[in-house]
Length: 113
Length: 117
Image (cartoon, rainbow over all chains, first blue to last red; front, side, top):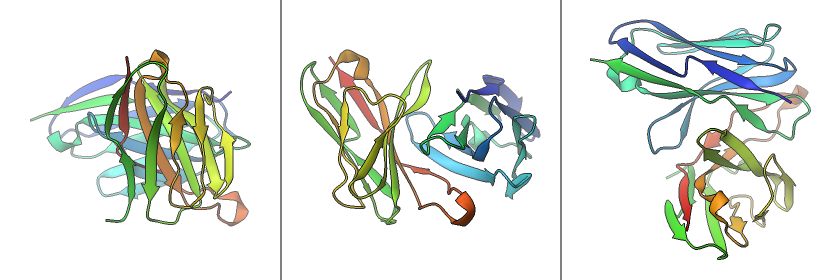
């Protein structure tokens, strides 16, 4: 059974700092990995999707990498801003599963002004 | 506006009552999903649908019923609500599979916060 772990569970950084969020998964037979952002009391906003054949994806100040063989992904946020404060979730779509995304428990990010 | 909507956004009900949560998407996506989010368990798939009239169970389907008579709607019914079904429910949708088994990203609705007393 696929298991997804996110470390750290919470992170607090000063504004302007570059930071890395980590995601690891136990079954490397995945179709893709997706990073989401969730604001308190809100739904999930898709940030980046990396297909299993890709190594990284970029969108603005966000860069996500995928190392399928080692079961790891990182989300890099450049020049963090207070508006980046949210919970970041990674989810994997595992081969053979019924299109079920397996989610990590998230990293709660606080960017201090 | 285009997108995925859920109703109601908040619902309080009593144990044993039937409750239906609605989900509507305007993208004509083939796939639709229902997840629940709970502290300590994260997000878990309840049911999903690959197309109209095609549904299948996810990780935690017990106590829930779904239907999909139209592509754009995917209602979730709790036939006899229990306290353990107190949760935040998210609907999601995705385009159909691409060639070569490539899967598209899932887009989520704003959620329904359900409390069962």
